[in-house]
Length: 185
Image 1: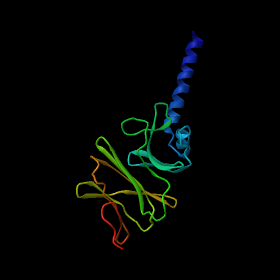
Image 2 (image 1 turned 60 degrees about the vertical axis):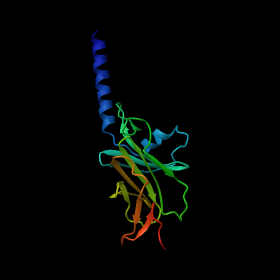
Image 3 (image 1 turned 180 degrees about the horizontal axis):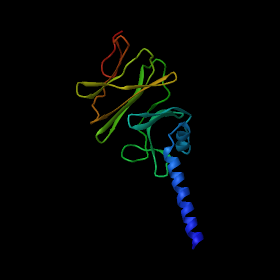
């Protein structure tokens, strides 16, 4: 009886230490590779893993697309890609194969009352991204630098405003890109 009790105590201590250790680990690029290794399109590059606001986000690329996803720990302390409603899915994806003549590559979508705007800034002269998140109300998107690659991201409460209106001005304020208005040259 004593051996059984000692065994239970040791297993409990080991499991507690294991869970405590795992829950203290921050996500890294290797976690993203592990999560996506069995997906149909394997991850080729992880641009970043970063805490933005209260969420851990990752941006990674496969052969065809660039994806932004939310990372969350499961009860064992391992990281997984999970959206706000608990589904194992990503936030947004954009096409990876773009031409250098493109100014911006973006996507927008919503799930319930939460909308996401995500994209890659191709033209280095674009220094700011403004997104219409409510009728006639623009918000500045977060610019995320990863080496020489720049992305933008904004998460808002509310339905997606259609048509999507994204503007990309230069440092001086000159409009370089707009989803709605043609740029005069």
